[in-house]
Image 1 (cartoon, rainbow, N blue to C red):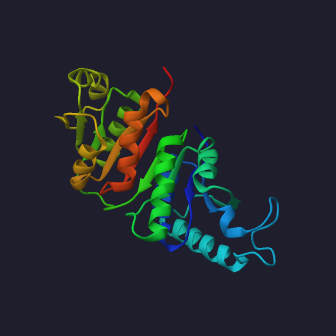
Image 2: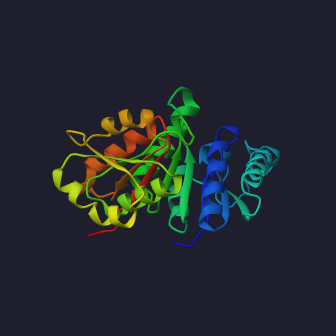
Image 3: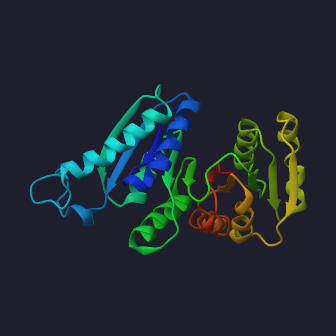
Length: 258
């Protein structure tokens, strides 16, 4: 997909996500779109009325400040990336899901669910993990170059390709957690394609997000696939657990229908 990298902007707490999104846009050679989403409950306005309209709960200055800080952070991180911005109204996860359908990557912040704001952000990331139709990167926990890339492998080729590419780009090892012995054989082609990546295979026992959360404690990125169908409820549950509780950034990669 050749669309921009889209990042959810909700104030100072999202600047780490903005910086990560700017780096990804630079790497992918595409633009960056800053999306500030206002829930209906915060605007108290009918459809089509600007959220800074007189009598609204949100002022134009408030919106401008958040987007200005985000734009500055993006420019500092990747000065050559073209940046656009927009204020969108609706249910945040639904709005960002719609944005993800035209994006190369969607990036959001994630924080521990402490307090009302924390629960909201965790909920948005969690809902996107089970509905987003494009690659999703949730920035949370430790963010740095230490540790391996961890792949929650359940024979998802899309997620495996993403994880191998990230391990190559970051110059780090890849740890593969899988509950099935046949998953190990499915990686042979990717091992040949990425000969410089050192792969460590580990059995996680039952397929749960909790094993991946534990592995995230020493990782710099965890990658998991999700198809968003009733038949894939277990995989989706693991993705949602990860984005709400992982100790490092999480990439959720949608799977193509069989």
